[in-house]
Structures are given as C-alpha cells and as structure tokens.
Amino acid sequence: MKTNRPENPHQAALLRLLRDGPRSRAQLNDLTSDGMSRSKLNAELDRLIELDLAEPDGFAESRGGRRSGLVRLSATTRFAAIDIGATSVDVAVTDGELNVLGHVSEPIDIRNGPAPVLDRVFDLVGKLREQGLYRQLNGAGIGVPGPVSFAEGVPVVPPIMPGWNRYPLRETVSQELACPAMLDNDVNLMALGELHAGVARQVDDFLLVKIGTGVGCGIVVDGRIYRGVSGSAGDIGHMMVDEDGPLCPCGNIGCLEAYFGGSALAAQAESAARNGTSPHLAARLAATGSVTAEDVAMAAAQGDPVAIQLIRDGGRRVGQVLAGLVSFFNPGLVIIAGGVARLGHILLAEIRSVVYRRSLPLATGNLPIVLSELEDVAGVVGAARLISDHVYSA
Picture (cartoon, rainbow, N blue to C red):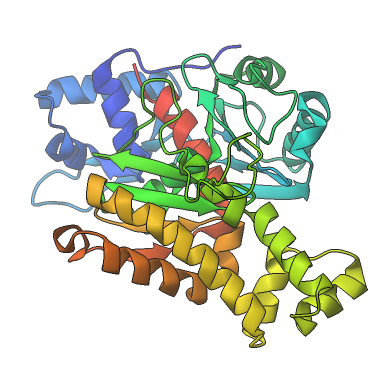
C-alpha cells in the first residue's frame, strides 16, 4: 500500500485549502496563518507537486503585477466513500475536492453480519472501478449505524448490528482496497457532509439529528466532530423519554428510538393498519404485506389523520430531547436528516414547536432548525471528508 502523504503541517494545511478548489499561490499566501514566508510556501507547493498530491493549473488573473500560478489538487486523487446503513449501503468515489464522481446504492440487511455485507460493499466499489472512475484509491472513509471506537476502527456493541462487535472493519477495508481507511459512526459522517457541502458550511457549532432506522446526533464544535472520550457522544436514540415505555433494541426501556426510529414507526403504522383506524395504511398493508415509514409519509400527504398524528407524536418526542440539548449546547444550527426525516414539514414543524417552546429563549432566539438538503449523499460526502482529513494531515 503506497499512498503519498504530506510531509509536514505546512503541506497538510495547503492541501486542506486546495480541497475547496484551485487557488493561486498569491491567494494561498494570503490564506495561510502559520507564518510561512512566500519562498517557503512556494517550496512546499513545489514539493506537493513532486509527491503527486497537487499539480499546476495555469495562471490566475493579474493582481497588478506578474500573474500568479494556480495550483490544484492532483487530478488523479480518488477517495472511496462507504456509508453502511441498517437497510442499505451507499458507495461513492470522489476526487480530491470531494466531488462525487460516481455513486451506487443497494439494499442490504446489516443483521446478516460483516462477511456478506462487505462482499456487497466491495462488489459496488469494483463496479465503480470498472466504470473507469479510479485506478488506485488514496483512501476510504466508512460509516456504520452504531457506536464506534474511532481510535481502534471497530464497532463496539452496536445494538442493531449483531455479529459486528469489535470486527476489524477499518483494517479489513484498508487491506482489501489497498489504501488507508477511517471508520466512524454514520451520523458523524452526515454531520461532516453537511459541514463540507451542506447547509452547515458557514457554521462552526451545530447538531445534526439523524432519524432513520435508529436515532442519533452528530455534534460539531468549532468545526470539528465531537466524539467524546470513548466515541459514543451523540447517542441520543437511547436517551430515556418514558420509564414505562416499550423495550428498545438496546435492551433498555422507553428509549427515544423505541418510539420514533424507522422500525418503531413502521410497527405503529402496522398496528393502525390492522385495527382499521387508518384506511390508507390498511390498504398499503393489504397490497404489500407490510408498511414502512415511507408509507406513513405518503398517507400523511393524502391527509390521513392517523399518519399525521404518528408523525406529530414522534416529532414531539424528538423535540423534547432536542430542547434539552439546545439549552445545554447552544448550537448555531440544528439539521434534521435521515430516511424518517423525509416525513417532511409536518415533522419539522412539530420539532420546532417543542424546541422553541421548551428551550431557553437565549439559546433559540436565532436558532434555525432545518431539513438536510444533501439527503442521500450526506453520508458519502462525509465519508470522503473523513478520509481526506486523515490523508491531508501530517
């Protein structure tokens, strides 16, 4: 495995600046804040070009004298982005600036365990290679829907991932794809995606709440993911909202996820279909043999009062948990993302109502609560950002 890396912090800082697009040497001199002289900066850029991490890109417009040379990241740089969910996997290949060059997705069942899931992952990566999107990868970022030891690169007792506990996922992917790899929780990757290319690009402190099969929260502080001491920060799906509530997959009682994860919502919808209180959901159950969170969204869009109430009840519980987090953390932005977030503005309105009513006025006075605009690509963009942060470091 041979992947060139920056040789010192100056080179790493220049690569991270170039990740946002080509810049002139003069611009880079203006943007660097670590005291590099112009001659030192030019020497470091020349070395990055020798290492095939960057390349010349013509000349910038004149600023009144000799035109400054443009520099960009190497056109051959490629990152694999792997977002493994509970029920589907997304794989993408990006360039060095994290533009998605190709993106494939297919259903999986995380409960089948590492071997069959990773077989599908590597098949999908292979398909992108067959399309001519890369010859060699510079790195791979991976997300999974459960707690992760970031330092070790392994999942740790993930509630909805039987058979994955302490599986050497980072090492396995690194060896198979012959490149460095990094592993994180899927919610953290979505937060990184929003930070890089979504609604949080200009925000240093924010929360991303993912409502999918499970519920989690990515925490960004001063432009960086906050993972906590052991990597479990943001696991809000397993905060108790009712001590007399239903059993959660984690083994505890009354967790938020037991009320409003995708599986919980589907179970509530199926109950409404079977007892006849929702004709829309009953018709869907009769037609397909099951109902999903997406069916609830469709029923709500058609004005089904039971579906609307299911969404509002879930939004109220999410809002209750989020209100406490907002008062505690005082973020500049809250993003609602994930498959269940596609329930849309009924859900968003309920969450906003509870948070604005229950949180401290000082914390909510200028607090936007918005839906993700990246949707399906947030995870893969975040995975590419994760591995690029690693590769572009010294």
